[in-house]
Length: 128
Image (cartoon, rainbow, N blue to C red; front, side, top):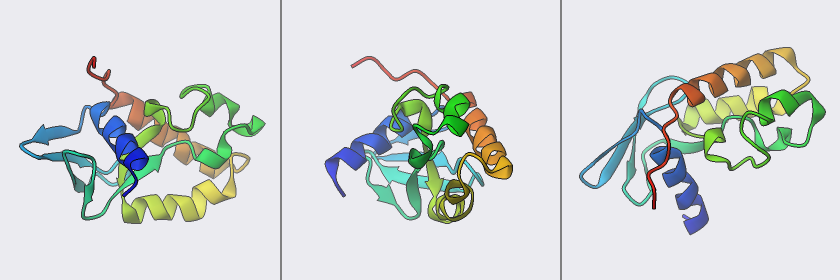
């Protein structure tokens, strides 16, 4: 796995109050279905953990998504927009809601709810 992707995983984990570091593994739950997920302490996924962009990367810069993207800044890789999800949920969201775009009412509602859940799990990153 690319080091840049590992850093994003670690950023998502370190800012998620559901994520706990035990010995050499992180344990958290899928943002969507609450399935238990594990990752190594260096950010390498174990099993079905994937990196979720809560507000899809493709929605950034689109007027219909402006209210959502303002909540996470100008960068899709802002830590508030990153979460850990199981592969099945992440793939399902990507194939349906993400693909329909921010003009689709149902897609926007799903992303809004996921973003609310992510922000409710927010914790400030530890100082370096």
